[in-house]
Image (cartoon, rainbow over all chains, first blue to last red; front, side, top):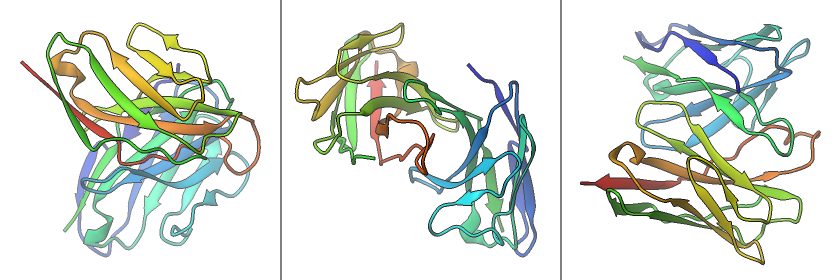
Length: 115
Length: 115
């Protein structure tokens, strides 16, 4: 199993500002994943963060809005830029599930409220 | 990945078995069925997964029909702490490619366990 720590656990931010969310894993992993969960909704994958290369973004998500860093095999950050109230969501980091017979592990999430 | 269909909500009495169905009629031969749950304000938690045989672990049992077009997650003795959203996910089995490690979440089933 993997233990994932996310910081901050929650934040209230002013519109127009940016927030950087950190994700720390207790073991080295090749890929890390960032998800968004809007209020009352399911999880949607934002991007896949690979160490040593650019993140791969899903349709509807762009690097200018959600820049991602992956400096090493145990750490990643997701920045929510130029925030608006529509960005109010829970943002979750995930690792694992890489093989066909393995499970994924999730952090506890960062609850973001934009006012 | 194949699409899944789950009932939006279910109720269960504490101590009784909770049987959560999932339809995945377009599942491919190399796709696994995974179950996760998300307790309020927490990250998703892995429960169980299987390919074609029934599986059991300390949390639950997974029954997959012979044609693999549907499955049932069984919580044998539901407790109040099992109240959560349960997600059935069908996932590509082979490693590599753009879907490597990604999970596609549907809306899930809200299970409410009552006293």
